[in-house]
Length: 240
Image (tube, rainbow, N blue to C red; front, side, top):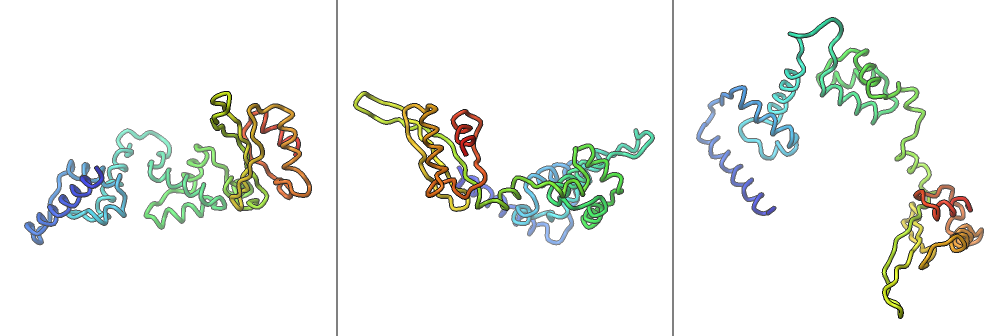
């Protein structure tokens, strides 16, 4: 299927080249409906893919058409009432993305970045967008660590644990065994904590003693244990 799709794409690209050669240097004229159809397809592909396949219209023109379509959709000039209109959907998306990816950026910094992209929203517009999405101002955002930042800062101190089951043929037939394993995030080293046909409290307590042993326990020198909320996992955490 992938090979057939690629062959179809190659054919259409070559067909477009032939049509361009037939047209010579003449400029194509598009109707509004044709612009709309091309812009809708172009937005889904993105600039990089368009640069490889777009023949009759440049990627910049296609994406500009799409921005105009979005602006026209949210243009409420004819029915606008008192007060300032809401930002366009594309600007709102950019504001939210910038605030999340750059937690120390304030309203003024976001407005400056949008100006570089060709947009000119007011500072109050940016503030209202962030408020609607429940995003705090820059001072409060910058004081909080994301999960990714937490992992990067404590990579050497984190171990994760979980269970999996395996079916084993025994003299009495097929039997399921429970396997508890640990993985050290910084080295990806995996260690089997124990294997049992039934995970009871005594078994889990013994495993907790083994992994927290002060000499050669896996959790020695570690500070954080990632686990789910079942009772067996919590027993190790409490023992630690």
